[in-house]
Image (cartoon, rainbow, N blue to C red; front, side, top):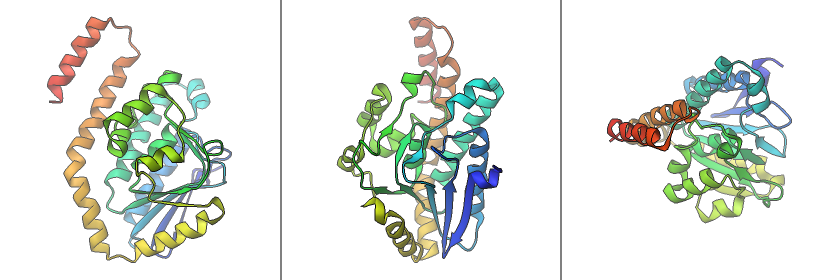
Length: 261
């Protein structure tokens, strides 16, 4: 499958539609990371559109996150590049001028759920946790997050729930997200495609200047912090795998406190 086929792009009215297309679970290889990055750049520059819709093909899984099997068998340079593009994609969604809507039809794990959190608005299928769950498994699978996994839950949920999902790696469902006012809209799975089209079509009819300037205002107010938080996560990730005593870790943390006051 070519990179273009891994991540599809089409324009529907004034909406740029980006579709993850690496079935069955849309796990992120480096190729898919790069393909998504290219599509996000294309959508941001597309003068015909004002809204971006991010979705995935199929009905069961939005994305299972980074393809751990492929990454484990590849060279360290490969995994490093996956992390670089993982960060680029999330930062692009957070800071691009156009609002990004995410359509979530199924389970999202790790990096897959990071993308959901990075988006501005989120439309979910109404499914029980047995059919659709979410999870941030990094602490369980011993992979230190360097693509935004400590930043995005903080932006999306606040400190308490961010700690909850990162420290426990527990599954959580739509009902948990409803309590946090996270979903923008919820529709039955059978109606999700049609209702999402209606929603994005209505949103795309807003004045371009209002949409772009509002999104940009939010970005400018937070961009300094977002960039620093990503840098902080990178620095912590660089030392996380090294054998350090608690005292040595504390010395590192003290330095970080001074560097990121």
